[in-house]
Length: 236
Length: 231
Image (tube, rainbow over all chains, first blue to last red; front, side, top):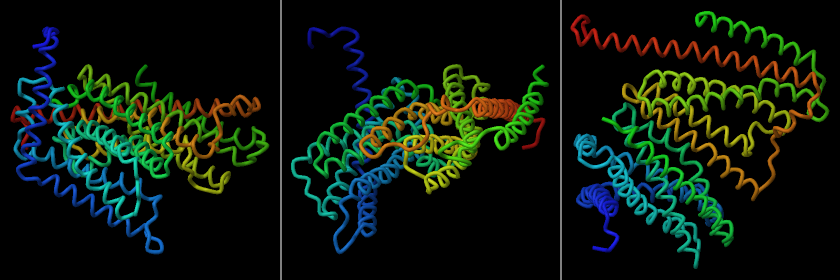
């Protein structure tokens, strides 16, 4: 044990253990069937293909369409995965058990959000390379920066999406309501993501960094709101 | 007193709306650059005042509901959220009419327009949650209102920064109010007062109606529990 091992340190270790227990549970369930990853990945790929037909001129696709196509695919496929991840809890009636567990709500939320974020990263890893391939884009050295943008966007999506999917769990018409209530809140993230991607494609590093920072600010703002409100919002 | 408040506010709103209509067409001069187009401003701007006021009320009431767990806060949030949709729709339609006359387009992806549209869509989602999500959706609605209010500055800055990298905004700024002639200013203030009175009256009526619905549902449930009512 390090020297700083006080009660606060023990509490945060305990908290982290709970978070990873929840996230690990979700990922283990997913790894056994791989249902969400496969369906999300295929759906994202289909979206990219459908869009690339719409943006083809003279046998070549329009590079200007890449950011929009990529982020639309990520957000649409992410919504499918988000709905499925929480449907599992509903089908097994395990959400109540999860909330009754002797763990802070915040740990349950963080665990769920981490699992969702990893699913979104998996989709991004399918959608973005496909976009670059179909639209004949060579990113070169900007790949690392694009990965950072995608990670930040995925975190924002997971945080906001987890709160809404958890709240919608016990309501009617949840499948149609999830995108309807989620997308307006995601608008700043989608905007910043597409602007950053567009800036990277045109080699404008200054603008790209600016929008990367904006994505970071978006994530911080909604992580704060989510941690403050999750306890009060998801009760049952 | 409370019983008189709503009819009184309604009466004030009706009288002021009639008066402002007269003043808009006969009591104010034509604006130099925009001519007749500018007249829609007297109704367009107060509608956005009311929308932002209602979103604010909805957000505060939602926070109150989440903190206090008292359904009376939720009634207020519900009523304000619905009215935000109504007044936002009027604002969007009047704005589009003005845009067609002034810019030649019904819509432009401009700072104020985009921000207001996203906010209006959020409130539309809020109204749909209230309408379709069924029992137990009060917390979801409250959460949506809180997230929606937090989202407003983020959308605003995102669009503003994207705009500053692109072309300048062409929507009239708030500073134009100080350049109005006194008759224009008076008409505008009367009109704002009329819409605020109308909005407050509608809010009070809606809160009462929602509260009555909730009480009826509670009574019904208790009667079902006690076996007085057949299910």
